[in-house]
Length: 106
Image 1 (tube, rainbow, N blue to C red):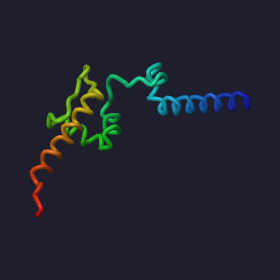
Image 2 (image 1 turned 90 degrees about the vertical axis):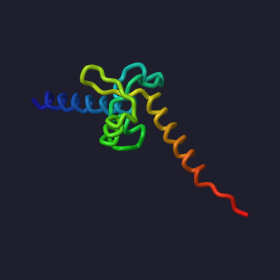
Image 3 (image 1 turned 60 degrees about the vertical axis):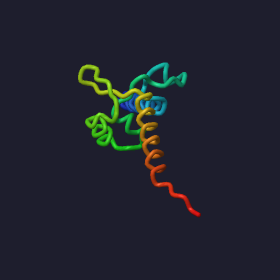
């Protein structure tokens, strides 16, 4: 019995180590994480991590139609290219607003 408990504990530890590896290399997405390919779609949590904002803010931006999204059944997903476009639009808006406030000094 003692050996069985040890092997069970070892299997559990191995499983936890495997899960940690999957999270570190792209949430177990298979070969794409191993070869460094970018995932085609991100979850709301992953999109929030990429943008360094809260998950709630991602849903708020989606509801305001400021952030493009894809629905697959009930699953909500975000394309990395749409996240990049969103950030670029923010940068363009900020630059446009900043140009309004330029004034000439003698």
